[in-house]
Image (cartoon, rainbow, N blue to C red; front, side, top):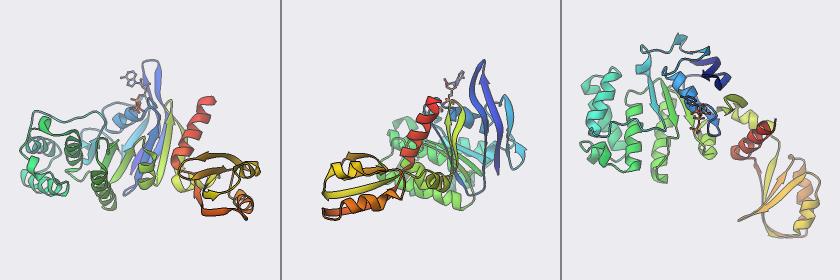
Length: 297
Ligand code: ATP
């Protein structure tokens, strides 16, 4: 298990991470989220053992993270860490060896992964000659070459097309099924919702929202009703508990809680309705509201 306990990090006088605690168990995909500058990268660096926390401690299976466990950690960070003058093969041999793999293990695993991501033809190409998306694939392959116990993924889908995003997703889910602990960070909340059971949202280095995604959604009672058809918008807006109505492909009626649904429905009894769907709020909405509230405090 990864344990982050009361971790604080100062850069000089500036507090970048403020009393942060969370745990990630085997097989869990954990979402570390936050606005720009919230302290995510600093937290990743502390977890990877590249920065020392000012206060608090971080342990992997009850051991402090240092060079002796770094071969169990894989990471894909936003800053590219590819050795772009090397070929794909040479860079993977380099990193694989650093992580204690034999050349035979590296070759077998590399061939499997290159095939999975349909880039076998690039094996002996220099990384700098690859497209952005293919470089991202190589970065991901490097991160998971040794099936790490702890995998840190910061915006892993950056630069990927939808088809390749699916391939990455499948691989990430397979790794978690095999027991890897995965910390996932993205500004794309729909990706976070797909993967993460637990999340923490940082603002100015402090947790402003944390816990089980299911519980967070249940506690946040607001819902959306998606409606299509001919009806009186004014009548709907007047219903007690309707927060607002926006219009896109559907009318989206934002309501205080589930009790408002029958009241809205009543107003549509004589209207010509082709769609009426109640949806829970998206993580994106919750994120924006919670971070907004915390900013105002
Ligand atoms: P983003 O989503 O934009 O990548 P982040 O959540 O990863 O942001 P961090 O990079 O961890 O944020 O930065 C947190 C805060 O610490 C920011 O205000 C940043 O300016 C500051 N900071 C980061 N690195 C240093 C450093 N080496 N020295 C001083 N301040 C730093």
